[in-house]
Length: 356
Image (cartoon, rainbow, N blue to C red; front, side, top):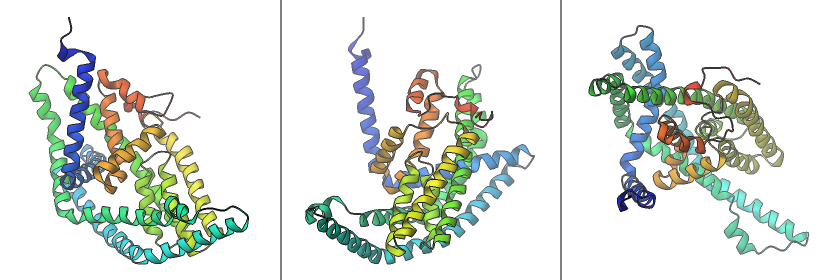
């Protein structure tokens, strides 16, 4: 006979209540949690090259020192370039918004001249393309503000990488006679590291293509938009669309209609080539998220953690998905989060070629 504490309804209520408590705690501790999640994100990116060096005989302490040095060099270089671009863009943002509002007003008058009367107040309230530019600037600025805790983030990354070298051995010693926990941990770690390494390389390639194309067209701050394309490429399906909107609007107000069309076309080609041709062949589709899950994760993590949470939404969701797929009892939840019909094991990423 089932007791009240073990009925399906009571279990659902307990899990839902625990979820609400956890989310409320995350929102309360957002100032502490965001730098920590950034540290975890950077540590995961560093794990693959760190393991590669260790496998080739480099001592662990030296490999860790090399990775931290690379993180500092890349961080200082990117911070100097991107930080200057963010400040300049935010300085010019009011002018861009004013031009865009004037173009919107002209478009409304053109519609009225064709007999399509639209209430001006309603259009101003429901259609604000200038707010897209402001949102992009505020998102990047928020990310830059978090990086002011660079020393604490770097220190946390160092501790995470150092602990990762010994955690599996500690866990195995704690579970003598049973290797299931160690095997599950290693599957999870290997899957996350492999996914993040491949996705990061592809995202860097996407950002370089976007920045190069915008430079050719003549759009302002191409490096800034390349960085945005890099982060948003972690979001499947809708990430490239989100990245294209502010750059297309900026090209419209800065250069004109034809350049805006060329900008949008360039993003379309980049997304088609990288997202539909290169990425499936390199990674397969086993860890892809459905478009609905990607959108909901973007909204959820953005609401919980702010703009930085939007940029980290898909890596966080993918880590949760891999963790669910690593345990038999919860694998079905991970499968439901996927967007592919032919779902592969997380361990198969990169282990077999994609067949056309």
